[in-house]
Image (cartoon, rainbow, N blue to C red; front, side):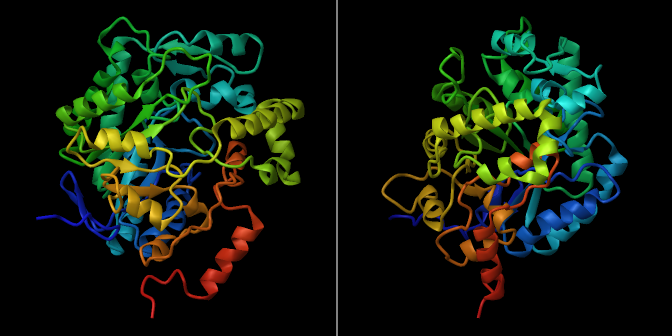
Length: 440
């Protein structure tokens, strides 16, 4: 007797929570900050996905400490229970549409703004970065030549435990505010990836085994938030630059996934990335329109230290675009390997741009399933109500992975599609009722 593969509209359980379908909005930068309008910003950014039928929404990376750790401008901190309590207005709105919402908890570690954002460093010269170990020699060399501002303090064993506790407390506040689950930012050069990666982690205590840090976070979350569903990204580092000799392999990621299942994690998100924050996580075209936008030139010069440095970063960005290139569903291979090795759900994201991609990843093809849920990120900048089309059977998203939405975020701009032909196409679809959840 054969069993038909699940479809995009089939419900699925993650831990104790039932997700009504298998399409999710991947974590993005909402740039909401912590100001008086933060909650309204989140509602404006996230409710359209729920209204259009997304089964699961991941709120983007939110910082668990009261200072440091922000990897980009206008990130939200969730260390304050009074602030997080206000986010119940957001979770209530998401639940009104029968969607589920998980919050992604994060800390930038070495990737914090104090390292790469010149204007932030100028205004906060004494703010440094938390480090897992002494930074790699390539970063120390870049600091010596003035390309970055490295001021790294290596965490003691006690400070590592305190950081894990900060994740746990933030998770507790989030559950009290109505969030359905917790997602850990385990990639994109954040501090969790730094603990997991042999490129960064050269500690001489128990946390040289980076999975032990995830274990400590798990224990802290269970203490503060109970049996809330817990998900983490796992970073396959095989697209790192050639000069990087130590990185996480596919075998490493499969073993980590198995260990985390044994610890008590409820799902994993395997992603192929570099050891650095680069275009490996936003593959696609060079964002020419964004870099050449006249209105952003002063901001870029401020962020990177001068107009010349901004131009240098732009050139490097172009070279990275050639190096990584665009590849549909680029995490499919590692997701399939992990899924064959664990029994918890595996989530796939990265370059998924069609209904056909979704169906294939879920098992509607010649190969076994690669994932149990499929997610999209940048396409939601182009189409905030995207699920209404994809769940209804429309084939292609509008997003072309041109990255004009992402580069301006370095200057504190919100994530939105800045490509005119895409904006016009969305307007036509809106006019034609394509984003109505129930169509005639």
